[in-house]
Amino acid sequence: MPMTMTQKILADHAGLDSAAPGDLIEAKLDYVLGNDVTTPPAIKVFEKLGVKDVFDKDRVLLIQDHFTPNKDIKSAELNKTMRCFAREHEITHYYELGRKEMGIEHVILPDNGIVLPGDLVIGADSHTCTYGALGSFSTGVGSTDLACAMARGVTWFKVPEAIKINLTGRFKKYVTGKDLILSIIGMIGVDGALYKSLEFDGEGIKALSMDGRLTVCNMAIECGAKNGIFPVDNYTLKYISRTNPERFIKSDYKVYTADEDAEYSQMLDINLDDIDLTVALPHLPSNTRKASECKDLKIDQVVIGSCTNGRLEDIGAAATILKGLKVHKDVRCIVIPGSQKVYRQALDNGWLQDLDDAGCVISTPTCGPCLGGHMGVLAKGERCVSTTNRNFVGRMGDVESEVILSGVPVAASSAVLGRVGTPDEL
Amino acid sequence: MKVCGKVFKYGDNIDTDVIIPARHLTSADPEHLKEHCMEDIDKSFKDRVNSGDIMVAGKNFGCGSSREHAPVAIKASGISLVIASDFARIFYRNSINVGLPILECPGAADRINDGDEVEADFDTGVITDKTTGESFNSKPFPEFIKNIMANGGLVGYTGSQLND
Image (cartoon, rainbow over all chains, first blue to last red; front, side, top):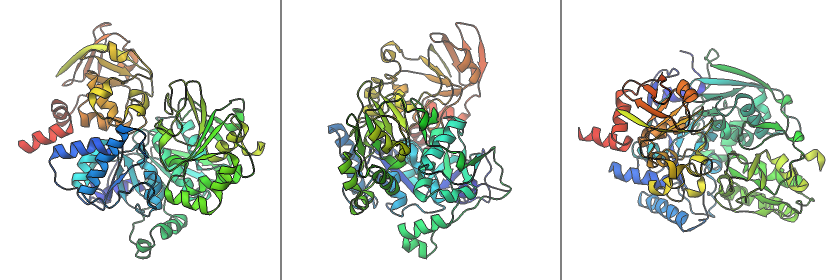
């Protein structure tokens, strides 16, 4: 039976020859992920299950990133619960803040060479779908599923249908993966891919760097998708040769390719030349406009960071645009490198100096303001251009605050202009 | 099993950030979560809701974050059932796991009004709007899902299966 990439990965991990859309399967998991918000309730469930040990201490990943460094006493308690559990079960991939492996979960898992092509990953965080950029299957679940998966290393799935997105052409200057995924969400809506896979293909994928592909897959959830996935190509191989040279040399990963006659419920052709610098206005990621059409929108804050756009390429793009310029007098520009490694590399490259000179505040890696946690929460009536992933009511603070989603070039330009703007205006 | 209650009606794309804002996620205690359920779009919800009441909404209910705190908050508020045109997939899965009954029924989601008295039968999938007299058919739960609901969620169900 012809299969998509996702169907092949699921079938293989379930020990089946094939898997068709709608099939319910039980599959072995390569990695199981939790964070400081979702792991504490999962630990409660884990204890209720009465299980002694996690299924594999190297394959349960516990990352503190949402409210860290602890924003208040309650979040400190959450982290303490997770830390104690991680120590008790000798979890390999639990790190303290400031360590070179540390950062936002979806930035560090690919960048530390943990997730590789062909892996099957679930995480109690909706943006777990990020790792599809590496040709793996990954999706978000809740805390009960996390607990059961920590115990057994398996979970059940309904095999999804797929939408194929065929990319051609090249991006115009300053246009990135963020503009592409915002445009797709704008086209199909926040439920346009509900329960389905988004499978990217076509010669246009060459226009997307690995960081760009991670951004695209990260936001697959914002159109309801179960996962987003890219084929493995030379870019992927080059990336994993850097992130995990040991396993790369041994070819210790698996490349899955979609069958040519695989069935898709929908085909979407996108010419990257047609994608403009894009923003999503409040209060849905599908409420997209050309950035150039929103220049009358004044702003109070800019956030550059998150699991969507906190990677090295993103911080570099921000520094390149802001170098020698000044953040507008009425704007706070908060730059949050997504991991300690990104932070250090940006420091070594002189980028943090450029950003500091421009008047940005540079934060330790954290999810922080993206979900209205800390490090940049908005007051009533304030408006923020943000490279994060959601602009729901109250997402970054007061219910009467507004978040406009964009890629890094628009965010950095807007910081200088004091309103929504584009790099050609600087 | 039947439930009956007054309807709280909401629109499309009700996201997990409005069901339970992230600022309240520093505790997963249901008693704490219910105090803040829906507060960003319906401040008076927590004071008006009574045990057994029913939530009705449009499409893509529960979109956004994977936080299980969202169905837990709704359940702790006393809501006995959520009816929507369809649900975001992580929310759907989480609801079953924590034992919050949910039914997909576009007809009911469209026609039922805020404040109506609605009855739903989990065995037949029939939803009846007692205020207007209209009734709607949804797909009834399979046996194992009914058992999960009856045991208050996946953990209770797993325990009951292990003890059998």
